[in-house]
Length: 273
Image 1 (cartoon, rainbow, N blue to C red):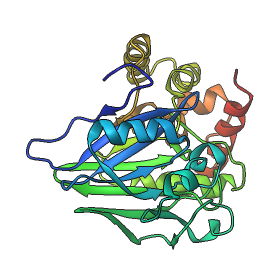
Image 2: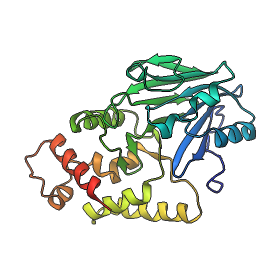
Image 3: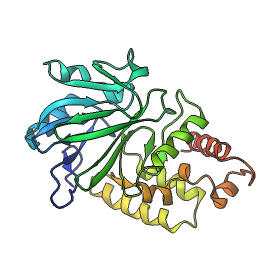
């Protein structure tokens, strides 16, 4: 991967026509280009216009759609600027109709969005916000899910609008996808997330390996995305609510429900520095 500030193309399977490109934006945000075989592109979470335009030009792609995961400004700040010349669809959840700038298409869970020959399925994943959605692609030997600020590498988003029960259900929904699905999240929070994970589960060797990998990537100024759902199951404390070690670390009773354990882990992370 190239240095931060440049776009980077995710490795494709042999014979794959679809390209996924990581576009660093703002301080620690990621936008993503999804590029079809014909060179048409969707951008996921268009926070900043300049880096997206530069990536489109470098990749020789034509922007046709903007797929927003939620309404927060650092994910939609460039929607209107990128779409102002027309012919660009702006997709978001139906509940964000009056909150998401430039929206031209409101979707519900399970609907399909397309860019050229690439098809993504939407998942409604409330918790961080009530209108949060993910975009899942299973095509050309590649599986990818764009999770915004719901599922991070080794973490999850704060509960600004939803409840612990909603977020836990949303994470479970994401975990129902195939285990080799690659996770493309909204921010570069991985190093800090893994520090927190290690504090809760110091005996977890998978976390130690993930910390080494993340540190090496960041030392080279490379993104830590994407992980896989299988990897997240091993290291992400918000997906490991039944871990006895985590429960002991946070004094969560063994008989506590998964949602109660999740809420305790989220509260601890909110206070973690």
